[in-house]
Length: 386
Image (cartoon, rainbow, N blue to C red; front, side):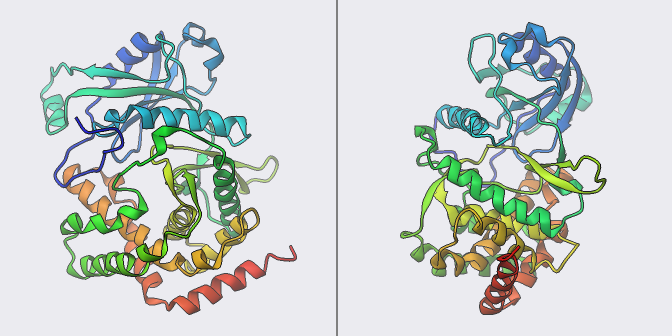
């Protein structure tokens, strides 16, 4: 078994579990005394996540964990299920941020008084369809967790505005500043393929991109990151980060009495938390705001995020000059790993980034850095007297 923290995905590795609905019912009953009424599977790259509603919250092991909106049952992938200390850190981080007033899911205690358990999932295959679905998915022990369901719409589902981008920047900065005081051994030395400093390892996965021009663009971005970013990272500020502020992991709520106007109301998915550079956290958030942006030029979107971020944490010059390189690196990382994951498990969700991501990456990559930096600074300066 890998040591704690050694959870780096390798080419050809199948890690997503197979969890039919009957197993969700069994886990909810056996671990949480809950009778499931409805199950809705949620999108996920490597885990299995289910929004469940239940018949009676009062049977929970700790009634203080009751949530009126239901729960999310998470069955973690076979790699993360080895990293018990990391998952404990994720649970503790959610509780920590909740106490700081940043809305996020709350871990629910099971019948053993724990916020997670390692379960041996022995799937009983009874239907031909089940055999096909279970094929190639690893069996064995998986970490199972239950989290409170946070209501709201995902950012991806509402029209993007400069006001929302500004709020995203604020949220990223406030979260990282709050996490500066968070301590847990589980987030130290976490080595995984989705960490931005793992970009050089993407060369093992680019074969999954069939289009030669797109593959060449990815290789160029990866090589640039190795040559022009990695050597300059050491002096930069770092700390605990969320690691995946994307459009699927940020919740919004409609303003009361103002149809069509939204504000940010929650943070989801702490599966990528680790200690890393604040520059990476910011670049990751900007990358995903750009991809689906249709309300303005996608090259303007970063300026509004940066303006909000700068309100709470001033962006040092040695970080600002690396933003283009890091945003492009994350775009490439998402596109390469999306293509690879799809080759292993053809779920259309895995190609979400690719629908607009290649166009976004090319526009960003073709624009000179000096021009981009001026463009973003001009937008940031437009907020100074607001």
